[in-house]
Length: 346
Image (cartoon, rainbow, N blue to C red):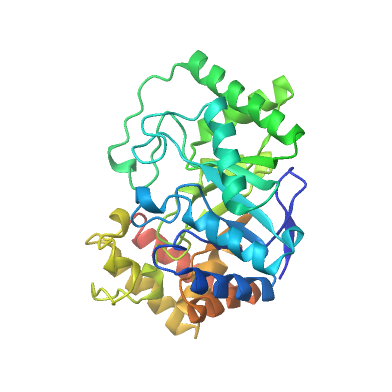
């Protein structure tokens, strides 16, 4: 498994990241540990979780369970220094700290909670799950209507969070801080404040990215390259749509659609023709469609680390095969043509 440096953070991470948001919901602890073992055996030592996981759906009674399962794995297997652990503080919502935005105080409290559940002394990458001011992610772009930003208030908030992050880094509780579900303006503002005030720099951004969701390809791509801010790409298989298992609008038993039928707004009249087109590209070139989709993410001109959210060992084994797959130019050309035909299917 290849490794790379995560932006300017100094962290060295595996080229693929293991996602854990189904651990404690779709996956039992023993199943999750088997997935963890396979990941480590294949050199995937960069793992992502969050204080609100598991999700699909998020339930008050399961909050933090994914982190606890990772903590149990660490207690049983040891070797904390083998891993680069990333987790997140939940943004303003209704389940975790209802109604409370991210602040310096909630950041510290959330870090302490995650450290306890993970059973570790430090978190390698601590991310803000979504910004206080809201975002266009999670299929919200169709009616996204940003109001005038109170720049002074946002600056004060960001400065407070980065100042707390500096203290947490000095205390050895986190090693780096990052973003998730953020906009280009937000990321640029975080970076500007870090540079001008001598505060910690946001190391990375975790946004959705796949063959079906390519919002990152324009302004975000420019910022990512210019500022050395890698993309942690979540849902690189579009919540399983790109595997083809939902083709024909079917819902296999035990699949993610069996618990979230619309896949968080991804199931639309346009999505299945788009999926069929990409499945056709893979078939014509003798490629596994999941491996093609993940390899596409790895081929982008900006640094991209796909997060693999497999729920079974065969799924994970197949997805890991993408690490060694280089897409031929003719495959890339067909993907580009398909994207122009189906630019935003959800």
